[in-house]
Length: 70
Image (cartoon, rainbow, N blue to C red; front, side, top):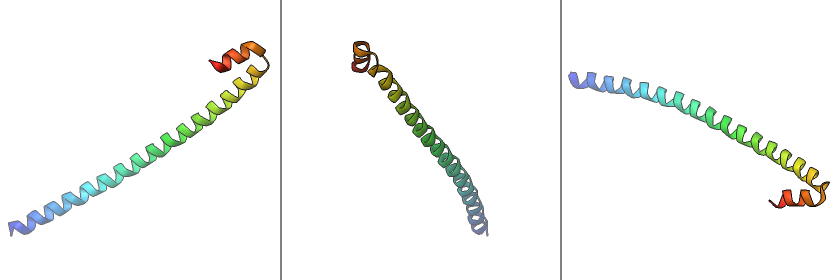
């Protein structure tokens, strides 16, 4: 009889850990998606800044050229 109750206890414990694992996977998925979105927005902003700097440098002759090279 005790063997059957041990199996039920292990089954209930296993289900609890599966629920916790499912919740953690949702949180980790949301966090990684948010991090990916922030990374993409950062790359887009860096590209806009780079374009602005290149536009500015083209009007500055040798100073702009030195700025772009460095």
